[in-house]
Structures are given as C-alpha cells and as structure tokens.
Image 1 (cartoon, rainbow, N blue to C red):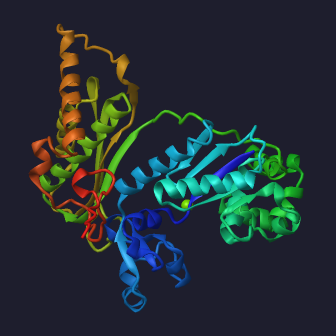
Image 2 (image 1 turned 60 degrees about the vertical axis):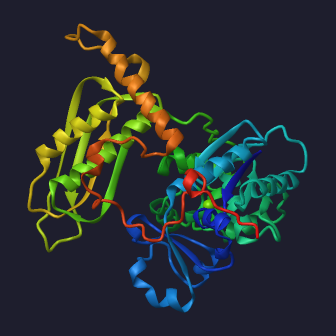
Image 3 (image 1 turned 180 degrees about the vertical axis):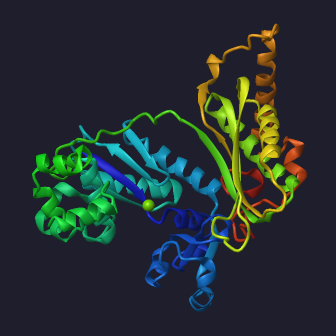
Length: 423
Ligand SMILES: [Mg+2]
C-alpha cells in the first residue's frame, strides 16, 4: 500500500504558521515580481479568485473582502517542506519526495488499520510543523493520488485521510471522476479520450489495456492498470542526478545599463556556484542569456545568449562570475530595455573527477580555490548568506525582484526569528 501525503494550500499554510492572524481570512500568494496569484487559501477560492489572476486586476475585491496578499517567500516554503519531509521520514524509510508539498510513502508490510495510521501521520506532521496535510492511501500511486483528491473534496466524511480500499461504491465514485483529474493524464489526452467515449474514470478503468497501449502508448496503459489496482509505477527512491543548473529572474523594472545587468549576472553566477558546491558538482561551461520582454511589442526586442567553455571544470564562484561577465559584455547591446537575464550551467560533472589542464605544471593550483570556496561557504553559513560576497554583486540593486509584501525568512535567518514577548 502507498500513501500520498499532500500539504493543504502549502504556501498559505507556511505563512499562517508564523502569522496566525491570517487564519480564517482569504489569503493569496503572488508570483515573482508580485505578478499573479499562484497560491490560494480556501477562503479566497470561495470568492472566485482563479489561479493565475493578475494582482493588479482585483484591487476592489481585495479591499471589499480584506484579502491578505503576500509576495512569495521561497526560503520559508523550502525550509518548511524539508521539515514536513523529515517528520514523514519517521514513519517509513521508503519514501519519494514528489514535489515541494507532496510525498509518497511506502506502507507495504503495515498490517494495522491504515486510516488510523494515516490520521496519526497527519496529526504528527501538524503537531511538529504546523502544516495541515491530506492523505490518500491506495494499492497504487495512481489510486493513492485519486484517494487524496477525494479526501480533499470531503468524500471521506470528516478528516483528511482516505484509504481507497475502505470505499464500498468505488465504481459510482469513478464515474463521477473526470479523466482529466487522474494523475498523469494531460488535457490533450483527456480531450482525445472524451472524444473516444471515455469521459470518466470508470470508463477508463474498464478500457482494454492493450487497446489503450496501441492508441496512446505505454504510459497511459500503465495508468489504466494502476486504476485497476496493479502497481506499475514504482516509487523513485533516489532523486535522479541534476543535469543542469539554471538561475534566472525577471527584473523588478526594465534595465538598460550594462552595470545593472552585470550585478544581476554576477549574483546569478555566484548562486549557481554555491549550488554546485552544495551538490558536490562542477561545471565545464557557463551560458549567459539576456532578453527584452517578449510581450512588449511597442519597443524593439532583442535576445541573445553565449556559452563560455572553461579550460578545466570548476565550482569556483570567482571563475564563474568572471566568465559570465565576459560573456555578458559580448552579447549586451545598448538601447534596449532588458526584462530578464539568467545563467545556465548546461553540463555538470562530479566534483571529484576533474580533468587537470595539459598546460598546467602546477596541479595543486586546482585545490586552492576549493579551500577558498569552502571557507567562504562556511562563513556565509554561519553568519548569514551575504556576509562575504563578490563586489560585482554591489554594482546595482535595480535588478532585484519586486517583493513588496514578503514575510520574513523565519526559519532560515537568525535575524528573522519570530520574537515572543512575555509581559
Ligand atoms: Mg498541496
């Protein structure tokens, strides 16, 4: 048996843990640069605010209903996610972290009442982190997902835990469940299935797997078998190795000056290098790109990218910044209003297997930047992320994202810890 644990309204729930005043109120979280609403509380959903609604379009509604709007705070959500997963890890060692707020748990071999066990998991997560979760349990990943959706809809009655195998009227429920809502089914497949007379999940369950394989391929065939209770999609217990690292942002305002872009590219390069070192990887090349807004048709548009290859693989922030800035200068053209820039590390290698340069007569030079970087990382870990940084970061602040309503990094920054006053 497999459980899918899904955090309820995850971003909003993270904010509520540290700001209980948001409890019971309609809350919306904005995308980068405070553009659109990308996470919603139940209360704001009930007001009819759709996913992706542009923030600037609903000022009256916000005022009328006292809607609480926040910028996204990914440092907080990432850290809360790690806490939730840590608590879940106490219940079974066999788990797949599926996304920032979802996790599959392997419950095979657990003989007790799984609904009760699920309730205990949900209670423990809530107690330990403050995050409410829903849990769907089933014999396959697809059915665990489905049970989770039903639990959220309140099919299970009270509580947020549903064990698929305890349901009596399975076929009647599947008949009400649109194929589009089944895990792994794209809207394209949904439309095609509906045209072929398979509009609900019961019809899909009863479809001939061989016919499905012939017309849609092996992926949908597996889904059909999973709906019928045969496990075909295994848990991915080991995350696949990272193929590339991308660090890119839209700017808070359009940029025209080279120095503004330099600052942005410098920060992106340094962050990418930090990530490399954390993952114990290095890179053979760095790609820099800049572009104007693709939607701004009234102004001339421009986009370009360049890849710089190193003589030997590196994870050194200084080296990455230096090469990225050289690349930037090659592609930068004055007279444009730039909207976005980014840095991509397209080919990653394990840090241990770096090839030394043929022309270097001093192999030890390879080790020195490693020690320097480890020291900088150590200091930044201990005293805060920006304690030591490259001067090029400071050329300009103009590129920073608009995040006017961001809460504090309560769990990742000593200076932002919530303060309790006893009077
Ligand atoms: Mg969720």
